[in-house]
Length: 74
Image 1: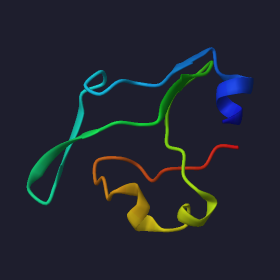
Image 2 (image 1 turned 180 degrees about the vertical axis):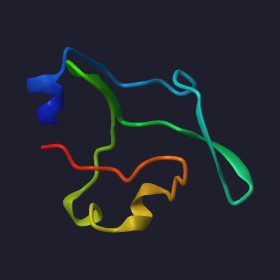
Image 3 (image 1 turned 45 degrees about the vertical axis):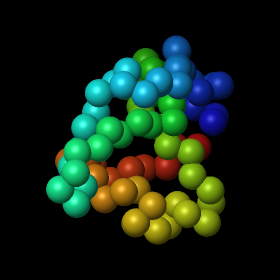
């Protein structure tokens, strides 16, 4: 949450259907909906809030093959 409060120019919590980010999982098309989207000076971040014990498990990210590996921002 630090990036939202300290570094962001603006941020929002997207509503279902607002971003229209689709991916395919097990032959089914699904919508990816991040917890927050935040804009900083030089980038826009899609932010997922995860419990500390889930951050190290690869399966918690849903296996989206089109996306780079997530990185934790403190």
